[in-house]
Length: 419
Ligand SMILES: CCCCCCCCCCC/C=C/C(=O)SCCNC(=O)CCNC(=O)[C@H](O)C(C)(C)COP(=O)(O)OP(=O)(O)OC[C@H]1O[C@@H](n2cnc3c(N)ncnc32)[C@H](O)[C@@H]1OP(=O)(O)O
Image (tube, rainbow, N blue to C red; front, side):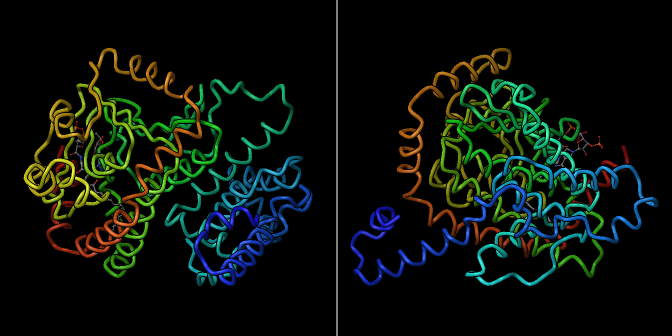
């Protein structure tokens, strides 16, 4: 502990070092609930226990409520502590499922445990209660089956992580793959999907894999923000939704800025909007020759995000960046590669085989060396990226309230309705 603190604060005065050391020690003590015996681990998460009113109304409820209750009971019977990350996820899903979106005041910065719980709940945004209930049940079922007996645990090779509705997350050969999984909607990103991607990245950052890969299922990589995120909002809600949308956007992009391991995009098909802009935050971008790169922000009355207002001009020069980000010019994979946005293009027919063969070889390299090198390359810019992200999110929050943006979204949705 003292060694860690010492390394962190080399060059500081001894009093400051002592204070920081004390602070870190108390933080670690606060977080030590990880090591509580399993029988007690719900204690700091007491609301995981089944409240009486849920039992009372059980008969009037559907099957999924029954599943939910049984999942809550299974949590208490778990033999192995699932770890803080999972406990926070369970807590957040439980609160969302029973109380809806987080609306309680944020605890103070030093109230570490309650703040972590509040953050986890608040991060679920407007996830519907039913979805939260289902996600809770799926998550517990994954935990129960993995603690049932070691013979039932699937081999590492194809283990699929439970708890995601819009993604498929797998770990194999030192590679964690996060696959966007709404192929019939061209992997358009719903608010639930943003949340799940953040959770998946958080999990991938801590698992024992070497490389993390984001890809899409079906013909598209992603068609960007799901424009139905703007629907079913009453006029008196719009400002609050825009505010929450901006926080979601900032947190989502922030996860990519801070991701600590080598991050690879396997762009299997066309990419639109935010699925293009975040690419600059990846370490490698492999694209099928069928992929295209389109950022029609102005057409939607919107403005760039994903730090692209900073990274794109820096990468390709202000003229080429303007063509993409202001005028919505769509690039082919070859053009995106020539601009440096894509690392390498592969023929679509051999894309999967070539990319995964390459990544499997890379994943055998020394894990810590890869991680440290990535951080050395990325750390120079982190502060600037976070500042850009905050500014882009703030500006978009205003844009979403503009007539230009609302009209453009109505056009897209009414075009659909006419078909
Ligand atoms: C108050 C606000 C809170 C908001 C919170 C947001 C938080 C983060 C915001 C981040 C900002 C991001 C910005 C962007 O990403 S901008 C880019 C947005 N994307 C688009 O404009 C693309 C729109 N889609 C299309 O143009 C076409 O669908 C596409 C070219 C992608 C494919 O065309 P094609 O003809 O091949 O296929 P279809 O159009 O028939 O699509 C099949 C079905 O999929 C649905 N679909 C596809 N993409 C989207 C999308 N982005 N949003 C919603 N729906 C999408 C499409 O409607 C079809 O559905 P149906 O089969 O049901 O009709």
